Amino acid sequence: MARSEGADKVSEERATRGGMGQRYLASGESVSMRLWDGEEPGEPKPEAERPYETVGYVVGGRAELHLEGEVITLSAGDSWTVPKGASHTYEILETFTAVEPTSPRRRPRGVTNRRRTRPE
Image (tube, rainbow, N blue to C red; front, side):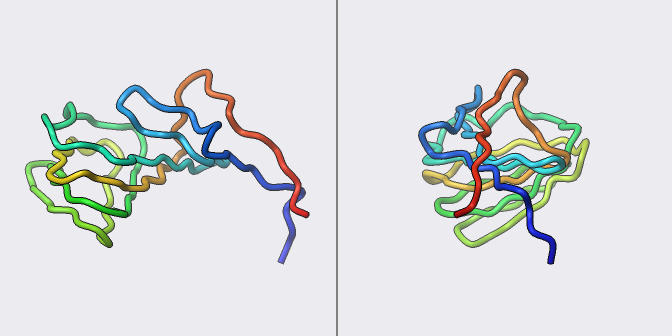
C-alpha cells in the first residue's frame, strides 16, 4: 500500500463554522466532511438543491429529512444519502448531531483552515 507524504488535520479549535452552524472538518481533493453538533429543534432548514452529493451519519438525536417529497426519519445510528441536485430540507426533532461527508468537496469560499502535518 502506498504511503502518503503527509496527512491533513483540522483540530477542533481550527474547525471553521458555517453560516447554518455546521463545522467544516477535514477536506481532501474530492471529498469534505462537516459536523452538525447539538442542532436544536426549531423551524425546518431552508429547502435547497446542492451541486454535490451528501451522505450522513446520525451520532445522536432525531430529525426528518424531507427529500423530493418523501419524509425520512433519522435517528442515532442511521445513515442517509442526498443525491446531487435533489430538493431537500431537514427538520430537527430532538437535539441533533450528525457527520456529513460531501462529494465533490464542499468548502466555503476563502476557508483555509487545513494544516499539513506529518505522521510521527
